Image 1 (cartoon, helix red, strand yellow):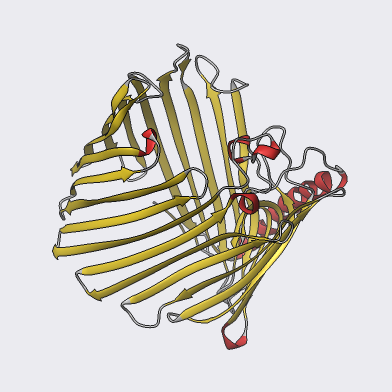
Image 2 (tube, rainbow, N blue to C red):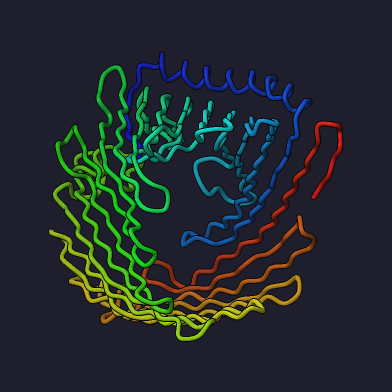
Length: 443
């Protein structure tokens, strides 16, 4: 979740990305020097997707997407490494427009990284995705983390938030960090904070705690809590406990609570905006979810599971979701599965049964699959009592580097009558290693 501001001062927002990209461009020259003297690896991938569908307005949407990823890593003899990472995507509409423009694109990430030989020290500069406690951000800026004595780790970041949604701004300046203490394989407890601001407003101020506890092999506990200092309220609590009393059985329980006023205080899209921010979400709403599940593997390839979850909305009402599933997987790449659930809520859209059947088989270099999902409403929704989606999947490994595939889906729902979708994808990956003395190997 990234805050937004309709106006920004402009000075810091313009200068920080420029600084980040100037550093990135200069670092590529720096990177070339150790590459010539150390072992280095070049990796890259290209993923091309063609989506096809027809809308309810009879528009033919055929957007073609391209995702490119590229990395160069120079490894020194002392164990340290310097690397450059670049990623970008682009889209062109081949028939009708899928958005306001026929073309679009963005640089997903582009940063220089240094990894020291000791203490897990990492320093990144450029556009990057940061996950540290309450922070899950894409930032143009600097990031650093390291291990210290007594099991203490620390991380910090500073920069300009990256927001690509039109007409929504992410503030001018964002910074934060996380400090944790723990013992590998046993536990970790962290505290974190971030602040996002502009010249005229406090966009976000969040603090949080997170934990992971693994006292014995059979028990695992993870959780987090985050607080909004601007609204003076808890945004979220989310905790999961997993227990495996024997190797073939796993029991788990989870609990979460979200306060809309605090959690959706500032967002980058109207889809999650509160009513007082031009959106549809009621700021008074609070939702609590709690559930339990059990999984049993009686034989090596077979897993049986049962689950129950309660969703408690203070305004919209509550709903219970209960059911089970079975999965069978063999060593020769055959996967079969089935599931069935009952949703018992307070509205017509939340009172239904759902079922799923799927099968996937890989033979040689090819794989084929089918997936069927069906929802049976207690009462018809816009004249539709049975909603379903049938998907066929196919793929082929041309070489170790080149794979092609696709899927086609036919569906019916209260929102779309007899809709079809298709996807064609081509994936290519490469890597090359070069040694200090000029040796080269490709894969």
